[in-house]
Amino acid sequence: MATPEQQPGLLLRQIPSVDEVLHEPVVQRILEAHPRWLVVEAVRETLEECRQKLLTLLRQGVETTPPDLSTLLSEISLRVLHRARPSLRRVINATGVILHTNLGRAPLSPEAQARVQEVAQYYSTLEFDLGQGTRGSRQLHVEGLFTRLTGAEAALTVNNNAAAVLLSINTIAEGREVIVSRGELIEIGGSFRVPDVMRKAGGTLREVGTTNRTHPKDYEEAIGERTALLLKVHPSNFHIVGFTSEVSLLELVTLGRQRGVPVMMDMGSGALTDLTPFGLTGEPTVQEAVKTGVDLITFSGDKLLGGPQAGICVGRKTLIERLRKNPLARAVRIDKLSLAALEATLRVYLEGEKGLATIPTLAMITCPLEQIRQRAERVREGLQAQAHPSVRVTMEEQRSEVGGGALPTARLPTYCVALQSTQHPPHRLEAALRRTDPAVVGRIKEEKVLLDLRTVQDEEVGLLIGTIGPILANTVEP
Ligand SMILES: *Cc1c(COP(=O)(O)O)cnc(C)c1O
Image (tube, rainbow, N blue to C red; front, side, top):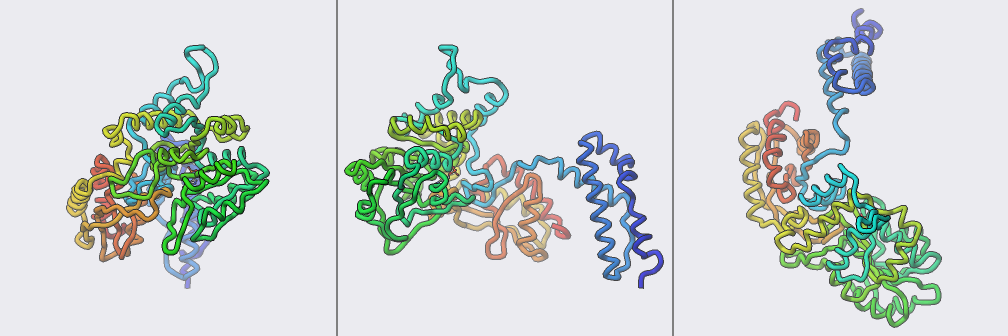
């Protein structure tokens, strides 16, 4: 039975009103630093939560008292701090997935960062020809770099690769047929499905072959009056093994030539540098694809290229010219900040070997295992020194993925710091790391939280230790 003091009405009335709380000196100070709407919202939500909690306890017949004011105020101030943080903010990627789409794919090189900063801060030559004093083209900043790097005749850069594919198919095949192998009708994360893009672009999909095997004669027999394009798609995030057969790009190009049908390749990732010396085989470079004589290639700017989000079309000049004139090109055009980062990234490629180490994506892929081991050792020591005895901090050899639809089966050897608590299940610990500032994202494997040091940059190590050390020291509420 509830005692008189426990009557719901009485208890609830002891919770202060929004107005009363807003007049508290602590809250007044918070109001000096944060917008009023944000503080009011935080106060309202905190009080409402408190009310609900009390009601629940009362309903369960649990004896309780209203929270004291100072507890409420510290909850409010925490809530304001959380709300005031930018929503899009830094994360330490300890997943080991280098091109992690959800974590922003490729971090930019110092050169690219500097160009973005300058173009963001000031006016720029975006579409201005300084020589003539007249309107210029934003494409000129990167087109020459792409043709030089890839060997293609012309290039057009748009917002992302999905847009590049959409624009290309719409330009070449609207109202007509596009022949694609069944084994290449892929879906990649974020709802990019080849058949759906095809439909939106106005092309009709003509599937040939089977999931695991497609032969040149499958394409050959499908070519007819309405055929506008032969399309080859990089399978990106999966690999078919076993009894398989696919038509190579060169075979497709030869067939297209014979029958007078253009051939396009959606490469997805678009490596501009050969990664086989680093044990990553099977990812063709854009240069190699261009050499086959394919009419059009599309690829992303922020996958293996290691630049900003962008979609690049390279190929035959007459085709690129048609893409440029399509009204859709304006709708999917690239913005100036991405363009600045892209130009800087491509210039790094032209510097050769030495420059490439400054592109974070490539640096992470090619990082010597010994360097990752040393990084992991530093983190292990740093965390061990702070961790509560109930937390085990060890180091183990593991495998990291490239991600971003590149090299789906490749696994790079790496070192991880493994965390295991006798008091908390791994998912609790992993969630606690995500709530720090900056957030740390790791992965769970075999009851342990793994922090993969391949995707943590050397200069982030101190921050990583400083951020999660206190969490491991505190075992009461991780
Ligand atoms: C990643 C990918 C895309 C989409 O590229 P975005 O730059 O993310 O728009 C399209 N096709 C393939 C084959 C891909 O791997």
